[in-house]
Image (cartoon, helix red, strand yellow):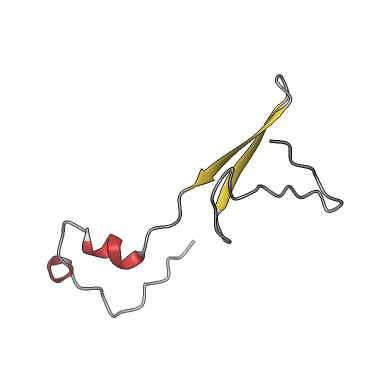
Length: 75
């Protein structure tokens, strides 16, 4: 399939070639030896709640945070 660069230097990739949705991120690199552009899809960021739930240590077991402000160090 051939895609054409428009005047704003954008490529439009048909959904039949690579299904994607708005907001998907791709890593683009250029190989000067073969004169090709390579696009690789970057994984989306994980949901912070899913990361928190998969944490092996329960939040109750963590040490409490200090409520005092840090002391100034003299240089």
